[in-house]
Length: 380
Image (tube, rainbow, N blue to C red; front, side, top):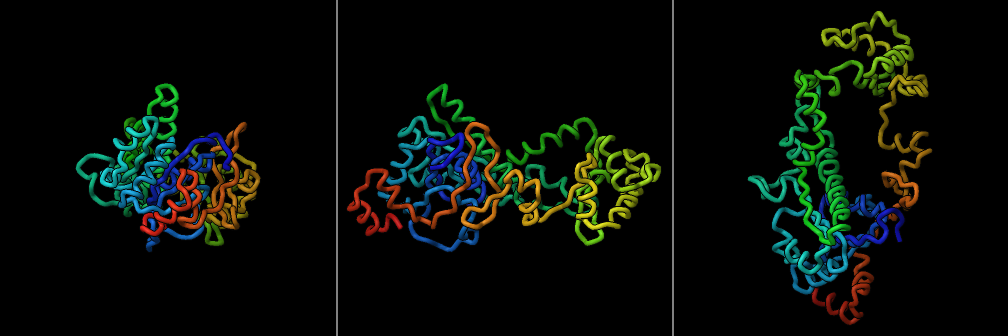
């Protein structure tokens, strides 16, 4: 049994790729009881691998949803669920007989969460794509990168996880709050284009007042400003500098031991190359960790750029328990934190489809029923 503010919430997840399982992981981390429905028979998938943190803290069953008996298994799960999560192209669950109309008729209180790249409608709804395509269309990719160079993909954090999975989880929780008043479920349509565009709200605000109109890599927050950028250190590693406000800039200059006259006029864009060159030359005189030690405890806004492995060992992250290692596999801990109903340590991922018999038994299937389903190829 999980722990956290969502204990008692029942979620059915139709197995898919990054954004849908991430949304479900957020819910599972916070205590929801999740059952993942996968194919009855294993098949190769380059994005499915053992000990995947996006599979943690849920039970996992294998069902052939293309067979009527398999569809009936899933519908019985949905009958007792609060939430369904799916990440297929528009129309797929409808063709399986598991679309919103069918499910909400059976369970009017169900929150039916859907995440796609382009959304459930629109000219591109039925076409393929990945994170890089969605954030490109959303206007979230073009601003990221150095001046005069091509845009740099920010991993798949903006589309799959931020604009997709996280926004879906937020939408599901909002629908559950509304259900508490109305008693009715509804469909949540999370599009990665919509979500990635939403993440650029602040950028649009800066553009609207003329503070972001100089092209990629020439603005305050995109690496154009010398006081908001990364710098190489003497050991070939990097520090991050984010000294935007004047008092933080003064603290940075003090830590670096720079003559303020050499970096005067830092807000004048014409002086940015000169100020950057001065900072870069000084920062190259020490190692990353030496600068981090000098800046620690100050307001210089200078921190080390850590690898994911190093981040898990940093004293601040260690003190807060920002990373955990269920079954010996390190990964981020649940977030955010709650003072009365804290989340527990995530459970290690189960073997694919290993919980099928247990879940069917919970649904009232007899051992004979289970064996017949297995013999018919309905379950794995």
